[in-house]
Image (cartoon, rainbow, N blue to C red):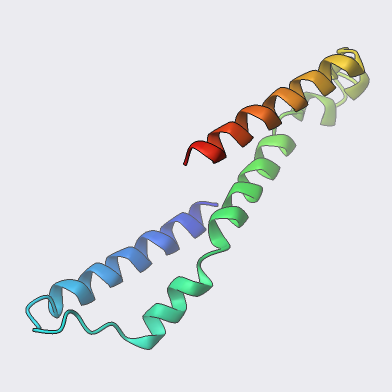
Length: 102
């Protein structure tokens, strides 16, 4: 996740360098095709970084269960299924409304 963030920051710095180097050209800056292809290739990296962060968080959440101090069944939540479904539906509605307001 950190590596992906650093790679995207480096891509932004390289893009800024090319913009700064060619900023005075009359028809705008000349951007190399490899840089444009790099930006297109970096589109899924944000999602990949999010998923990697989620995996690291979830794996690191139960170190006590790994060492036998607490069983996973005792660490799990005891919420009833209707409460989980209600929260899922509310999140879906809220995010749908946020999407429509953009």
